[in-house]
Image (cartoon, rainbow, N blue to C red; front, side):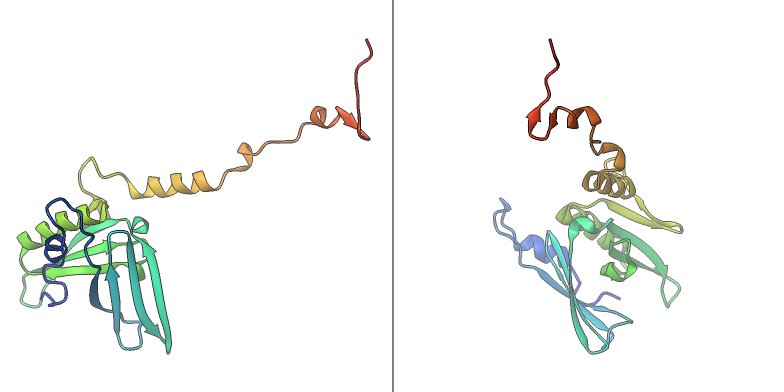
Length: 184
């Protein structure tokens, strides 16, 4: 079930970094299925801080560059396989399903769990487990992706309450370029 392009992706990335972590790993390129692309394939370039998705849609070449911080986390999911067993999937989960990236899939559960831990550390994202009702954060250290998103929007876009109102007494101290002074 594992595609050759994704087998041990984080093992290859870790091997390119020396013991001190000084060398930046080369970005990894994955070929993934995309039902809406012209050739049903898309190319995904992974690096520590950015995910770049290349595909062609109705003859138009598209390149989407998404910061890793926009992703919810690294998610493990399970689905039933053809032979009645389970297939474990490792995904980079995004709120928009078209931007989610399938990192790996395998029949070996222990290998997927190892890749899950390594990839969550590599990207610096929360480790998530897919449930029936959606991804769920694993462990107390992983913060809620929803509350972080709301907090970020609030910081970037202040509400009407935080804007300063112009007070009439601030405008009344100067009239026609003459300062108004109270008589003594």
